[in-house]
Amino acid sequence: MKLLMLCLGLTLVWAHREGNHDVVTSNFDLSKISGEWYSILLASDDMKKIEDNDDGYNRFRIIEAVYHEYILFHNMNFNNGKEFQAMLLYGREPDLSPIIKTRFQQICQKYGIPKENILDLTKVDRCLQARGSH
Figure (tube, one colour):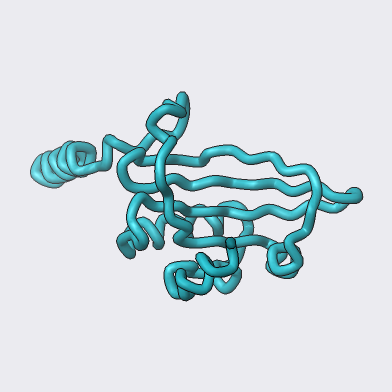
């Protein structure tokens, strides 16, 4: 039993040391957020509203960020007494690791957004996006 407790204790210490200490979940430094970001993943509990580019009052908040790697937003949209939510993942590079994308999926599920409502924007032709913005 003592050996089991020692192993458990060492495992917890190791897991704590291995954790990503760069993840920020509050008291964000806005100066570290500025700069170039790429759209990576988009999710919503009502994808039709996203496709329709529905207007309304939006309330954004940052869920978490690793300033040099990614930032995750939660958006609530309120329009004519109806509301929907969207999650947005941006990266400093055009794509992010599967670990971060899986983390995004987990957070979406926590907010009631199913996995099938997650759109991987890294699979969209960015040349077409750039032409459409001019």
